Length: 365
Image 1 (tube, rainbow, N blue to C red):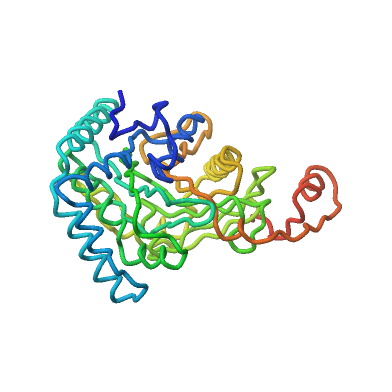
Image 2: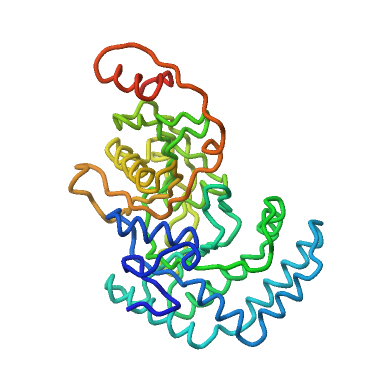
């Protein structure tokens, strides 16, 4: 049963962005659509509001925001002040009880006491078609235990006022007052491989292609630019890989041997220059991205992972990818489209070219 302060991903409670934020609303929607989403729950914006209303915190934040200007130095100072205010206050008792109960229920459902979770910010204005806010707020990985989850939720709330987020809102004309933050708590995947996929080619905006990027281990080293991913260019209609680019991958982020946190380790030489996805896994990830695009009705950027412990019955040699996030693509989707050129060929290639324009990117060796 959901409380006003938590909503399970597999529930049928109201799931709009005003209550769940962009990230969690998308995960609830994709769970309902039958996508392979790891279980979890959202800490709603109602919980955030209850925290602000507790102990005069809202007034303290409003006072800190008074007279805020676009000056980066001033924004940084005010942001640090607000983050300290939000992070230092005890979590409202009823909110803490609801989050603890939801986490304990998740642990029972997966059969693992103190199961490791990812705790991710899900702001109301996040992951919108007109402004993604991707990377502006905080995420905390491999969090175990109810107290640690509560601490991470509180730090996610505070990250609503990171320097980058304040500057980004100013650049997009978004007001500072009235902001709302939900938080997603999702079972961690012990990823053998993880990465991202885009349903338009980020290089040229081609909507007939899906680009899958992948590294060993968890995807944070790719997101931070510390590891260059393998890249797979996939035909969206035929779901065939038309080009594979393998990059040297020297590091990976994995659970520590005692399972109490994450460690960065060197990738052994034999895996550094080999593809980190089976060909069937590439197709399944592209299919997952295509499903998200069809569900939401516009191009998507997704994040996914392949669990090192789970094998697939459908991909034979590969494993089933799971969906961690889905957000609107906000670069090419906002640009005016140019008429697609067509080419004439034979068979399925001709059909694809006629529907979606030419494919001149090359072929897999």
